[in-house]
Image (cartoon, rainbow, N blue to C red; front, side, top):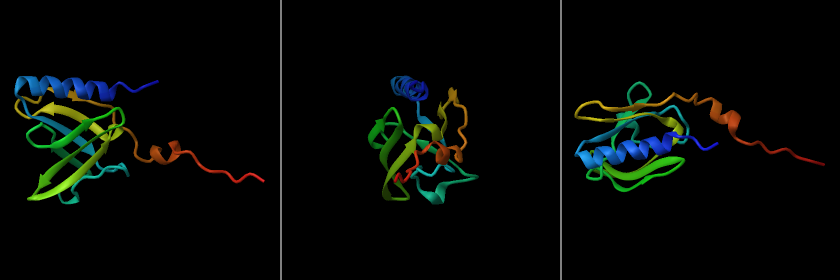
Length: 118
């Protein structure tokens, strides 16, 4: 079954953009596929501003969020799998939604393995 999280993220993002609010996401950086600026990670988490004015080429996909942004003057490609997103909220009032944390170690268990057959 398709997870509901990406749909909720898109809905909250659109509501925040329409309301002139600043959309932020809280990311669990323990997940292996997360690509964010490491120097801003605190306690295995990072908060990212994903508003249209702070990002370029924003993709709110079914399996990930990706965009380009500037950090300390340096442009960087950011990639966050949907299962690593802990919440989306408006910076001005904290309204948003939290998501069930996913165990990063379960990622390895979910990846298909190869078996050599004779």
